[in-house]
Image (tube, rainbow, N blue to C red; front, side):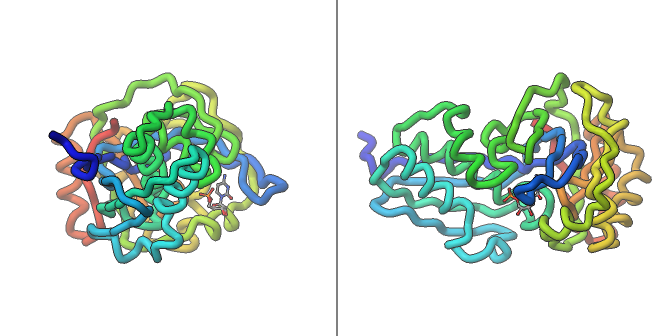
Length: 278
Ligand code: C5P
């Protein structure tokens, strides 16, 4: 017999990458109107939860120390937001294996928040649809709705207005490289030169698109330019900075090409992960 307190549920929190990110203008509310292509990787954080009387969080993993104090953690904010919205009085003992680097352009905190919504919706027997979780997700961060769905999609508004993207890239080999520099999002947005180079047409070839935050991020962390040059030299289908950096990604035709690239990049001593898009 399975007793209630034996239940342990697991939820993956895939890392987010921006295959393109076009900035349009600064809005009156301080956010930036943008257009982006979100994709997600098999690599990511992992959460587990079991029933408890109160909501708690324990961190482990390579980047647990960098994830910040519990009170700031988006996982706890997501848990309390869902409990309030659903009128749940139960708690949850949550554990987060933090594998995604923090302040890295990989949406780690957003992915964790989204995974928490999915996980606790199951644990508490709510079984809310992803669409129903979207409204809470948008209050937690601009990237959280995309992370709720964790699938290739187009994002507009401040990132929370989602639409399908007409490509199937699942299985595409990807190399993620971060030069071990934490880059805070706000200052990179603030460093944008405010020149609108145009939006993203549905289905546009990804190679013709850009990340408009690259120059501002490189001004804060010049090593990002070295990462991009090193990735471009490996002959990828596409290489680009993700989000506000500093992580850069490269897509390859096959695993062998990705693994050769990983071997070529390794001597730099940067953080890197070989994975694939989901
Ligand atoms: O929405 P989120 O809390 O994840 O955003 C973090 C910060 O990134 C914001 O405080 C803002 O400085 C910046 N941002 C922005 N425009 C966006 C998304 C985020 O300026 N579209």
